[in-house]
Image (tube, rainbow, N blue to C red; front, side, top):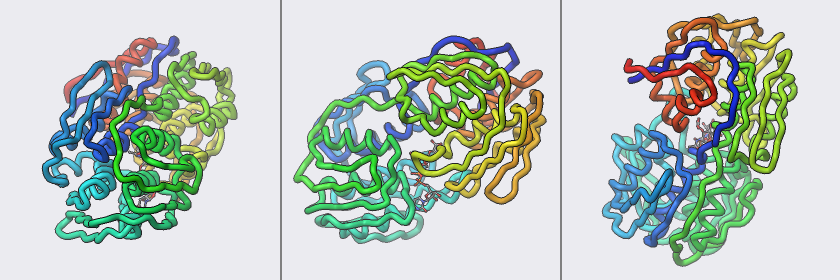
Length: 418
Ligand code: EPZ
């Protein structure tokens, strides 16, 4: 494992281009399995998560060419066995997104259960309920999910929870099913819409993505296509917090302001200036940082993936803030690490009470998961003294060229072995 070392160097100033969305790229890379024709995908963020997904596709038999900066040509005309082993799925929870495409294209698949992760148990019951409704036989033996269906048939599926992954998996499987599938209580995150746009470019018939009712009319086959991944709204939000917590001003290029509305609204409540244009956002730190309260919810509510970053910002605000995490059962692991830096945070069930302090103190901390690690980097930008973040691999899963982008904005940050 490697570490990140951050030394205080004052406010961050400048502009940064936001990379493609990790959470849009992962399902779209999986969706290429629905066709044997070539797909070219632009703005695939260079992350360990996307590298792991490309590795899984290669093991399945995909031919993948790196055609330029962050772009890949993928042809799936030689898929040997629709199977993925635990050594691959265990590294990338989102690997289970290959299930829907493989089931639809090859009528069967065997995929090792991805297992949980630190932020929660991450069940897949809603994915399996959807596949079963489409007519698949579902079995789980020795940690392997086996799906089989000579023909998938359209169905009406109500999701007990608007699960992002389940909506994506069912949507992909339904594109080649006989008849019409309606997903109700579907997730409405922007990444769902980006996937639907990609599928429709391949010749699918997906309507209503971005609303809670998605209708998919099955087609006989899908073609290859070309697609550019939408910008990563969570990377963008993380840099907005970097501007605010360091006392600086950062212009984000290549963003969709609409995707950041819940965060922008909360940051404005804290006194931070957020100015939007069509494809950019200028964030400037507040004279006085006010507290606020957030409750994480499925989109368009406040995103759970920005909760830990805002917690770091609240830790140095002038007052008490309350965070309620409703999406995952264990997403406060950054709290103990922030408290090691002097933050005053108390957890009561699903709520964290954050009493702002004038400053944090640099020390040795550990990244427990992707977004918790990002929160510790943000805290290090305003802490007094050096912050040493261990297990930094968690951070590289979801932030492309993170330390380089921060250095270009004036941060003193370097990667160090162990
Ligand atoms: C996606 O995960 C994202 N990952 C997560 O981002 C994000 O936090 C999450 O959506 C919520 O927005 C990707 O897109 C690759 P869910 P996913 O299914 O699809 C329960 C990051 O940091 N649930 O919407 O796994 C589940 O337990 C990552 O970039 C079931 O009960 O999220 C959780 O409480 C972290 N049964 C809730 O739904 C199921 O079958 C949300 O899960 C599936 C989910």
